[in-house]
Amino acid sequence: MCRQAASAPGWLAEGAMSNNDWTPERIAALMALWSEELPTSEIGRRLGITKNAVIGKVHRLGLPKRRQSPKQDLEPADVIRLDNLSADMCSWPVGNPSDEGFHFCGGPKVLGKPYCAKHCAVAYIKPAKVRGNG
Image 1: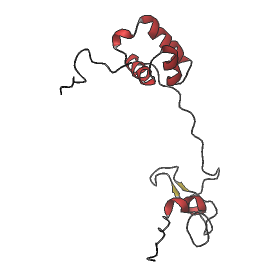
Image 2 (image 1 turned 120 degrees about the vertical axis):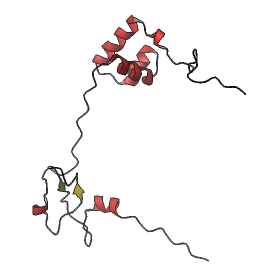
Image 3 (image 1 turned 45 degrees about the vertical axis):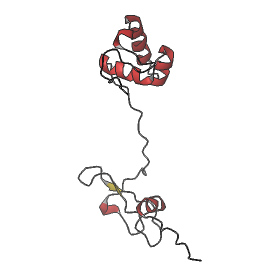
Image 4 (image 1 turned 135 degrees about the vertical axis):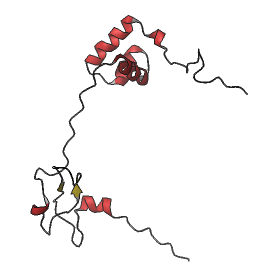
């Protein structure tokens, strides 16, 4: 059985767009929708194409990147540095030790452990239950 190579001229997956399908009107519509900061899936739905076709054309056109959503800071507001870390605080390291913003979690630690409950769940693996032979 002979398969046509993906790079062979004239080969396109069903529903795929070629560069010839991008008319000036369609490109203008893409650019307008992109500037409205609609999700790529919504732009694709409105243009009748896949979101990957949208992403590819945006990249080829060199359109400006989108603003990234601000990442929510899940760490406590108080930054705990080594000199502020007390024996009852979680000593989970946050960040790269060579970076200026490096600090420790500082949350209340679990009795007998160096970390808070959240970081104990990450640091320790629960032992597998041993099955009896009978």
